[in-house]
Length: 343
Image (cartoon, rainbow, N blue to C red; front, side, top):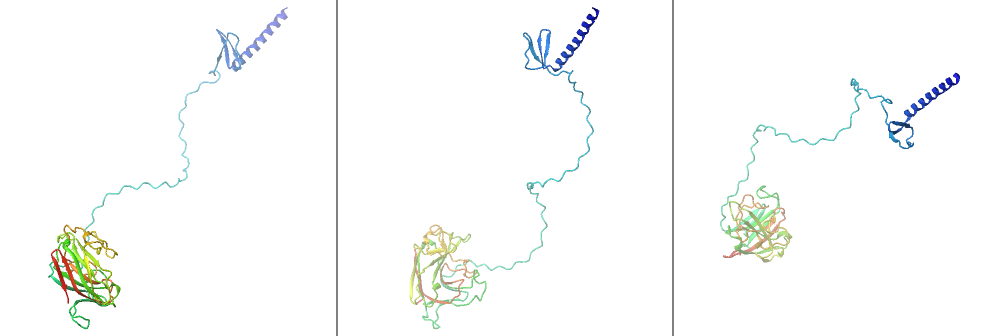
């Protein structure tokens, strides 16, 4: 009997130890607890359902499972510097900086050499009324005195071959010749009082095609000596005949025969096939006038007052010989007619 009792006690003790060990393992492996009042038991699978009347409550790790974090330790000593890395690529060029302040003014330089003397200016005195014969370079203009060239009383213009014998005596750098007949007595005549200019000329057949006469007029757009605005008016009859006989050519201010040197003041440039009426000139009805003046057109005498009305042949770039005559020139204005007859 005593032996059976001891055997039962031993069996019970072993059973308790096993059950206790099993329960402890279940608690450690539990993922939730089923709770009812003060009673609870663990479950090791989240899919396990609690017994009737028990509620399932999830769990998290406890300080028993993992210890609490300790305090942060003190900062360690700085490590040693690493090696210098390789040089990087060249950067973009930076923006240009602002200009610096102006430097101080330099010292005055030495006095320069004296310049060459300039040409003497022409005086603005009025020319005596009448006819003026002007030969530029090696040209001859004047009353024919015979010498075996025909009539003894016609105006003669003769252009000779050869270069200038007086360099610098005329405007521009050409080497040609101009023979000019100038008419004075029209200085300050309002341009709108001029009606026509005509002349009778004879050009020998042996002359080159460019032996024509052309009409020049010197005009001051403002008719103001204090602020002159000179323009050279050019009129030319391209159909002039070269057959050795006298022909008359008439320039009327309303015809398309007028141009200007440089193409200024309302008229086309000299050299155009078609001109315009002189009435198209700037200030035609409000101040422009004929004027005796020192004009700087190429081939004209340098620093010389020239008559307001000029009849010329030749040019500053041609020295081919030519020969021609003028029998008469007629200028018609609103005040009447002036005829210059060389017969």
